[in-house]
Each structure stands twice: as C-alpha cells, then as structure tokens.
Image 1: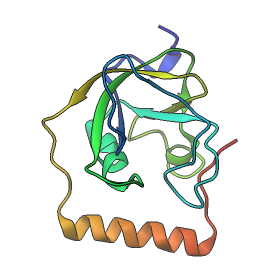
Image 2: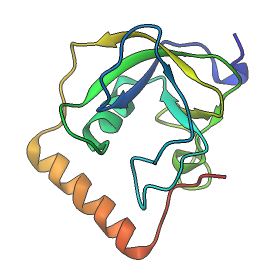
Image 3: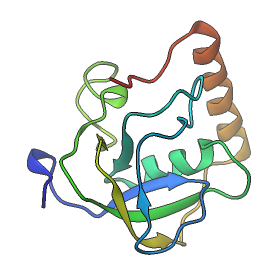
Image 4: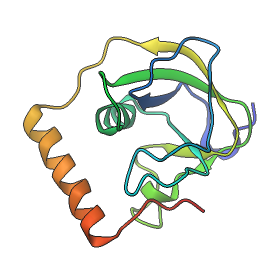
Length: 137
C-alpha cells in the first residue's frame, strides 16, 4: 500500500456528497473551507472523530456522510492539522494528490451537539474573517 510511515487504516473521508463503493474522490474541486479555492489535495483521516468534523462542516446540502476510503497513491501528513499549526498529528489526518477509492459508507456515527457545532462554525467564520486559509500547496 502506498502509505509509508503513517501506518495502515482504516481511513475515512467526511463529506456531504452521496457516493457509492468504487467511486473515486479526487482533488481539483472547490475546497469545503475558506474561500472555496480549487483544492490541490483530497483529505483522509484514520480517526472517526476527524471524519465526523469533515462531514459536519462540509459545504453543500443534505446530511454529512462518512466513507471508508483507500488511497490509490502516496499520502502525507495534512499540514493544516500537524506541525505547521498543531504539534504532531493528533487527528491522524492526511492528504494526497491521488484519488481515494470509496470502500463503503459508515452509517453508525453521531455528530457533535448543536451547541458544539455552532461554536465550530463560529470559529471557522472567524478564521475566514482573519484571512486564514487552508494550506493548499
């Protein structure tokens, strides 16, 4: 598996997109965050908690969804959640320029309380107001 030192899965991707097994998630679309610039990477995590935040905070209509995915190429630590912003990689979050293949949908998960979700949305709005964008290079 083209993964390296990060370890093995399972890996997850949180989104609002409705997908099916075998679908490929690819970079090149508008980011879910900030100014929605074209994303140079697709993101994955080895923790269900991080995938839940991705599903809850993704832009779009409909419910958040979490998919178990497998990378098709090399991955690297996500600098938005690692040493450039936080010590280490506590959320075990990664990114890749290669597609992620959807294995199946995770159906048994519970999102944060409405209050906690509201606080996170407020925090993201504050980052946007300050001009802090996701690291995309």
